[in-house]
Image (cartoon, rainbow, N blue to C red; front, side):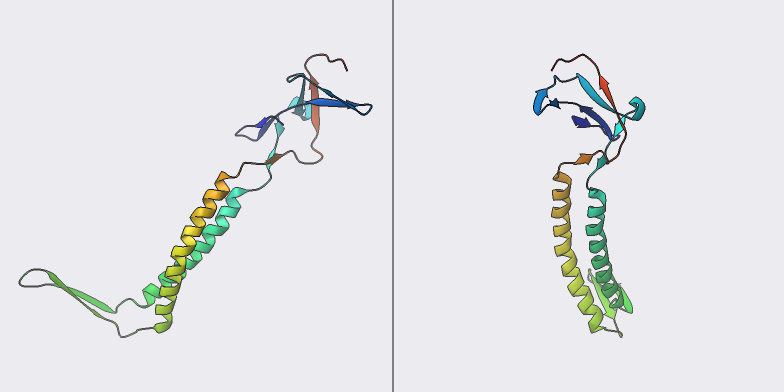
Length: 152
């Protein structure tokens, strides 16, 4: 396999022929490998990077969502902001429904979310740096096209 283009089309050539236990190298461009009946040969990615990244994103989203739930539960019932006569402002909050469990959720998952976010970013960068590995599925019908004669 020489290359795979952006549409998963494969450019493949025979590089050698094995005859009677001896390997004979073939010049580039001599024998091409095509899809069935000369159609383009298609490859598939060995590993789907998108689904791996999505798993990290889903984990991060869940943790961030839990942190937000804790934050919302502990929002004040009433918050009043006043302008002071000599300048400045004053904000008063009233919260009759303090919830220690929600405070724990907000704090723990908020901090955990920051950590997981950094890990997710590093993991995503690493995944995207991996080279693409392509393969032609087993039992794919192919056509061998000989473009010039060879002598073994």
